[in-house]
Image (cartoon, rainbow, N blue to C red):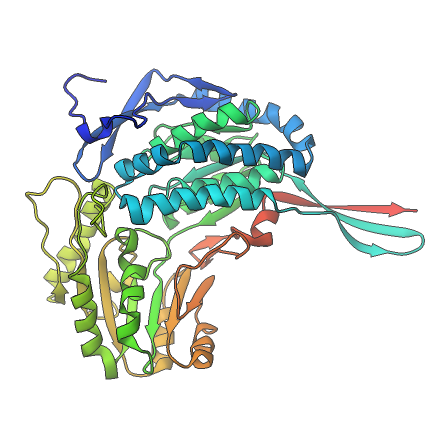
Length: 487
């Protein structure tokens, strides 16, 4: 590390893993000639340095995965389950390290966001390891039987973002491995440290080549998507980047799962107990600093309750402390990176330039270190405004007035995105009827962000392609193979 590089002293707390960080390739820990800085978003200082892999090292990881595929896919489900459970055990041993490292590199509050993310990821591995895709009998007569097998694809490449660097990666890795595939992960350079750490842990318990973690610059992503030995790409990130992934995968007709952007709408019906649901709606929008694909990005409230709802919402928001995620009293941390922070500033500039009404926040404290963005609420901006039409992915929320439920549904659906949405009202039957009209892959009624290993999740329109979770998601890590047998 360059002696002139400012390193955040909080990273070297006694008793926690502080590095060095290595690539995980072919069962071993591999150094890289070049390294890059990883920034703690709460301080703006360098937290650590991560290895920047060469193209040759990515090729080595893919070759090792390709070699390992033959023996890994030949194992029984029960044998692969044993490996995955041992991996979960190993992650559990290092759980506290992973939680702290996640807060340091991502910014999210340690107690309320980082710890649940790591715990859910470990639990997810165990749950997925117990799932099976058995042979199905499609047809059988006295003389003939038709079987449907779900066979592994080969080497799966994963490309993951910076908002949930532990959970979103293991959501891909675990179902791919239990189905018999091997995996090469390329995490974002904004939050590579936790991935490198759980990649290192994997080398202790999984056979060589089954899981590799390769970090570095933007060129590694296209290398992965273009590589002829990669059978599938599972990508989570922006819609624009997803389009590049899809184009690249077309060259070798790779299987692709894309979980992309969203501009999720929440509709508060006239009969809703709006005071009771304000906390759920607040965290649905501002949890994780607003940096989640299925976060509430647009909040539609009926005119009859609009004014008191906005007041109640703002009053609740004022009780939330924003600060370093290591502080146990903090409810919201910083925005993860400078690029996203600057993008959010463009939304704020547009709101002010167009005279839209800011009822909370809106002023950035330029003296504060790190990427702290104020909780900002905009009251009833025009439907064609930037903050309504585009995905902000941060702590700015427009609260919009509507007069008629049909109008609210039409406005909610008038988007290129269709990832998630939610509907809130006392009359559950009426709320479900509205939810069924929302054009999205997942819609919640009187709750939000409930997910699970057996609950399919995916977007429509430009929010994605394919499904994660559920049997539907697990099957996408396999090819259907029909075997027809004359008895």
